[in-house]
Length: 465
Image (cartoon, rainbow, N blue to C red; front, side, top):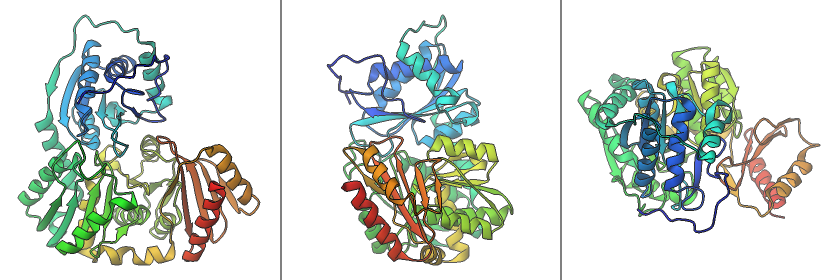
């Protein structure tokens, strides 16, 4: 794909740098020349000698990855090339090959005219402004690079890296506990298909009695079914219908770089992310009593209740993969989860994975019964709205109106990440996205769906007024 070139002159600021990754519109915020600068700056800022590089299936990712690689090599850095791969495969390979860092060229679930990069340091440690991203940005913006006297080399490690990754991922389930299950998997024509196939082949080799039905499985950067993002309501019916049509025990769907996975029960109903977080938290606490569980601040009551009942310690972190990963490391947490379907594991470099969760759910369904039954009581105890996004002309004024309306009623206000208002029997979290120009609302209650509905209606009216 030829990346569009913006004809208007740019200033020196690179607008593609966000709070914890790189994301921007092609030809406006990000192009081949900028990708080269980022690659060179990444190597220089980290003093790197070896960097892992992967890319998703987007049509622009091949060219951008090539330019990142050239920038790295011109800085004297060797490139360990994963080719087409998921973000989590880059995380794994960075540690597996003892590299100085890793980059995956991906825009995940963003629109077609976007692309970006996710990055980690040595040991797959997260990057944000304080831990190196600001230095990379400053060097890339300065655009004053010296070519290394000895250029780096590019090495294809795709086969070896995936084999080692698959071996690691399958250790998260006890194959002997798996029962014959039919699982519907929807790759959305994203990057997940080939990686899933490698995991399925390994499970078969180990004797797992699982049957898979696949849909939209082949990677296709034109995304004929639309950008894979099962968090959006309009994208769920295809998976739900297929689960019912095939009589599957549950369904799994991924986003474009498959670092998020989403679940559907055997009746095709979508399982909201916070209930999956609670399920997995409980499963890990069964294995390690008293362990710490990280959660994000958007929808919290279900997770906090489950963790307390299981004897664990719930620790809240800022939303976003870099912040959750750092909290995981700081707390030595066994597991962490975000309601947006990111799941983090201590034994996976404290990083997020979209493949490990479905293996864990398969084991839970095998040993404890249908997924629908596993979450029914939790959904009744702590109903929630799901995340509602608002694109607003003046987000600052709109959010200020909401905060003013509820400030005097609140029992507690948490401003660590957006605004979390505890109103007794119900609460809401309102925050601005770190990567998109939207305001996000989540409402939850203690056993009363009418309070959730009323809260959503009231806050929506204030935001849109």
